[in-house]
Image 1 (tube, rainbow, N blue to C red):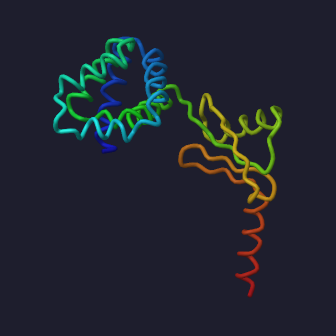
Image 2 (image 1 turned 45 degrees about the horizontal axis):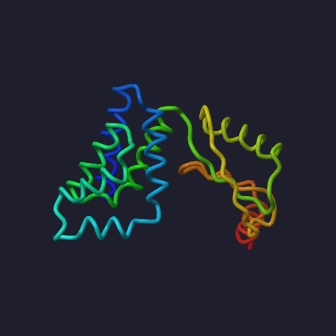
Length: 179
């Protein structure tokens, strides 16, 4: 289903670029995704109900998402027709990836033992930008006491690990090689 979500996201992304509405599309799709995040099972039930015709699913979309821009609403209607409403959050995830790539930006998760100060986060942000060549990075913080000290950053598939835990693991590996 990830391929299907990717195709919908790519089609919506291409239309948004073509119609010069990329930021609008991103923000509206983000709102739709956030609003529907906890309703995956409900959408799955709607999609899989053999007694509910496509016209009823489209009517549902029209009522719930009627204020969305024309192109987004059209995609949601297509999702309803094809019994793919359950893919809304996956489509947003794929769309966000395309959007971030287009703008040369990404999201990062910064893990540390304690809540980092704004100054520390700014320095980490600068480090991330230098290491990844991104134009912008959006940081989310997470407390992780297992790190013992320092911090670990995850940006996409890249991990920058400056934790004490990693240092101790490296020392342990060196001792094992000596023995």
